[in-house]
Image (cartoon, rainbow, N blue to C red):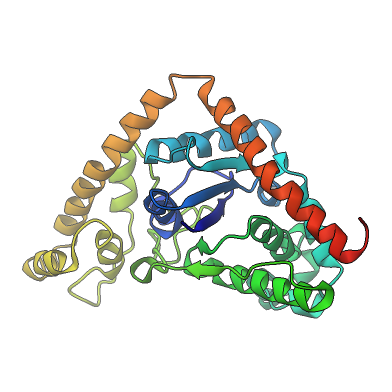
Length: 314
């Protein structure tokens, strides 16, 4: 049995890119492994500045995971803010990390390219060190992520290696798990599907919302196959079956979008119904989070004590 860990920000509704890029792997791997599903609410503070929204989004992430089939009795789902060891270890990592190293992060480079690096929040700039702490506290073997998060796993590994060289062997080096077919899920505008771009298809969308979002997918009129539609559609049908359908409907963008709509409805409908059923138990989410907090602390606490002994403060 291996230890699996990955995190998700409570910063809005999950979309199908979140599901296929990370959440599906977490659900699939839980049968034979121990899975930690981390709700990174301190990371979300970089974008969510409303307390009620933060509570709502956090509640919804747990509800989403349960609707997808996450088993909180066997595995652990918890809030980053409930385990203070995350921020404490993040600070310790800051003391062995240089500014020049953090300037390699995609967030910094994006801001630099826009001439806005001076406006980049410290929380965004320092994001990789807190994420390294999130991961390394639990000694996971595997971290399922989308392609856009691969660099953060590399940062965590680099940080673990540097700490081990400086203070002695302490941390295990995790491996990223990136599903080849879903490295990057495109949004309705062709860019990576993202809440920040507002170009996503919601994971628990109502039928009308699905129709509106799919019909808004940008199509490339220069080709016979609408590539953005196809790249999303292949998440729901086998490639050989899908290729035949698209060959038979060359240039018929509306027909192909309507087929994608039907496939999305078939996929999302049952999940949406299960989610609504689970939501009826108003006390369940807090019970799950309370249990997850205790189980996470039982692992993170001793690990941080080991770190403190290694650096000489305990």
